[in-house]
Image (tube, rainbow, N blue to C red; front, side, top):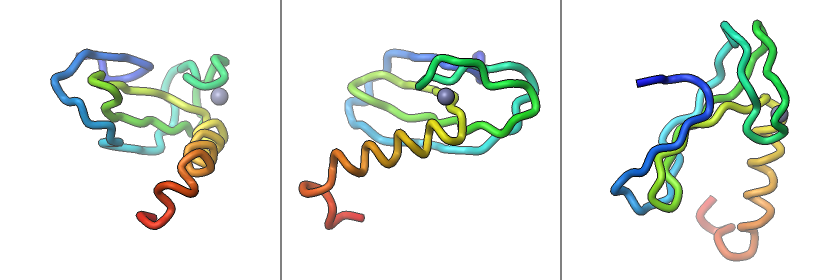
Amino acid sequence: MKSDGNSIYRTATMTDQQIDKRMHKARKKHQCCKCQTPIEKGTLYTKTVGTFDGYFISSTWHKECHVDHVLYVQERERGSFWWEH
Ligand SMILES: [Zn+2]
């Protein structure tokens, strides 16, 4: 199975969860799933793997874009799930 880049697979899992998050140094050019611009070879990027709404999703992010995304999600969930953190 192709293990890099942005990919999406249908799964039987219906829970939404992040399975893995890692920092990688790009050995080739990737594309950021948030801003849709290239992640240049040699830069650090974030790779996440998780399930969402029945899909298995693998995404590559600029480090900064992923931080933005995490802050956005935390902001959105504040008030309903804050006690779980
Ligand atoms: Zn980006």
